[in-house]
Figure (cartoon, rainbow, N blue to C red):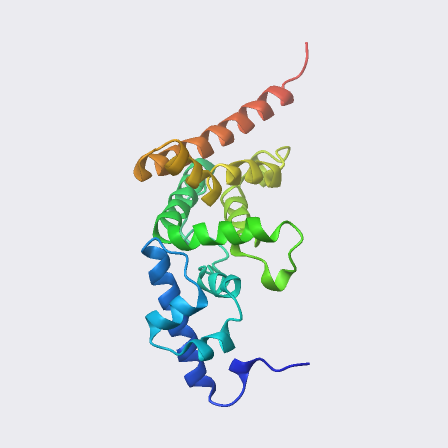
Amino acid sequence: MAVPYESTGRVRQKQRTRNALVEAARSLLEGGHTPTVEQAADAAGISRTTAYRYFPNQKHLLLAAIPIIDRPSLLDRDAPDDVHARLDLVITEQTKILREWEPQLRAALRVSLEQGPQAPPDVRPALRQGRALTWIEDALAPLAESHPQIVRRRLAVAIRAGCGIEAWVWMVDIAAMPRPEAATLMRESAQALLTAALARNCTSSRPHP
């Protein structure tokens, strides 16, 4: 099995070089460009030959520039028990991530569409890691006791469909919605889906005459 170039020799220096290339790529993305390996190398002041040792093509570079947010939850330890309040906190934080990392997440979306649904796990873009679903399910956790009939995973999927980078791009680019308004609409949509699920559960649990 081949040993990755970055794992041999002067590892710390190689990590600094890699970080410089990634930061250069992120800066170019923020400027509205989709950088090639050569462009990232030039911006970082690193030779193109060296850059290709770290990133053999543009796709690998863009994947590296995508933020990896490994937080298991977007809620603090003192998060409220009320499910509406919990969900609003999570969607609010998620829209902040969308706004802060929008260029990188747009690049992730492009890579995701190019790769198709069968990409192997080791090159799977951040969009397919399921982190947002985990965050939303965590927000909905109180439903396990208060409304056990509600399938939380299904509800989380419905909410995620309206508050990810895909929906963000549609709102901002197609609907020409200002970003603050897009963030507000995502929060409102999430609450509407939760309210509807609770209402359906109450209706279905009533005894029939």
